[in-house]
Each structure stands twice: as structure tokens, then as C-alpha cells.
Length: 179
Image (cartoon, rainbow, N blue to C red; front, side, top):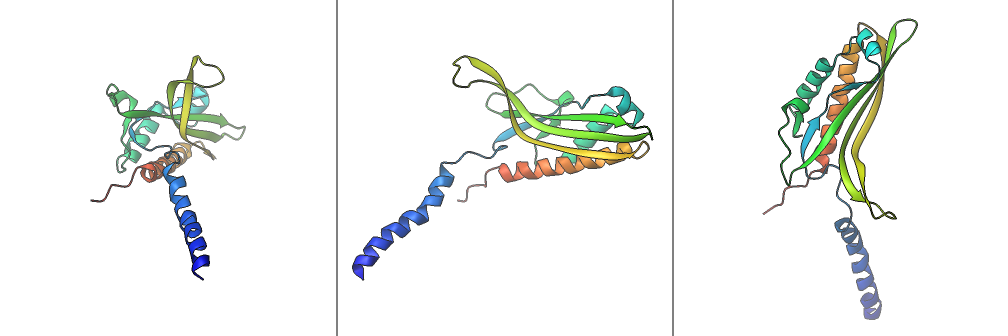
């Protein structure tokens, strides 16, 4: 019996410690340690269709600013951003809206929100540095409505996307060390 226990105990010990070792050596979550999130201006792929559907860059900028106001995300509009500080990780939140107006004057918008940064990195097999876009988070959504309701519907979807980004940001931050 002692012989069986002496064989099983080390095996059990190794198996019980294996998951912790794998977690300790794993990669950090995507938004871990991000200190600044700069909200870029919304890009409209078809300005005429966006205008027809009542979408305006200023309105969406206001929706982003107010949606981030009650969160822990250190988000700031591009127009209010200070120069980047050394040692503070900064990413760009890039909204893009593609709108189409059909023959019945219904509006359809494809909304894309991407958190990314541009870096210079060496990626094998080439040893020369390349300009690379690192994408930390991305989400897309489609909204279809009549022209009069479209700005509100798009704003509602943007708020939901900001909420989901904020939740991911919160989950990716380190848990405070206990004393």
C-alpha cells in the first residue's frame, strides 16, 4: 500500500500543478495594461448615404463620449487627446459606418468598431522591420430601419458595442494584488 501511495502521490502532485504552470506561462489578455484608448473620428464609407439617413460624425462622437463616461476605460476623444506618454500603452478605437439606402428609402448600416495600434515589428522569415497593425478587439453589427429612426438605432448599437468593449477591458485588467 505504501508503495502504491508513493507512486500515486508524485503523479497526483504533478497533475494538480500542471494547470497553474500553463496559466502562468500563457499570454496576457488582449487589453491587459492598456492605459489610454483614443476614440477616432467615425469614418463613413458613403457620406451621401449617411447624410440621407441622418447620421452625423458629431452625433456619433457624442454617443461614444457619453457611453464611456461611466466606465473604467480610460477613453478620450481624439480631439481631446494629449501627446502620448512614454511607458503608457495606447490603442486607437476606430469606428466605421457603411450605409446603404434601398429603393424604399430604408437605411441599412454596417457598423464596425476596432481597437488597434500600429507598431513596427520584425516578423520572420524576413528580418527587416515591417509596419504592422495589431488588433486587440473588433466587433461588427448591422442596423436596418427607416430614415427617421436610423440615427437612434445606430446610436443604440454603438452604446451596446461600447458596453461590450468596456466589459472586455475590465475583464482583461489584472486583479489587484492582495496584501
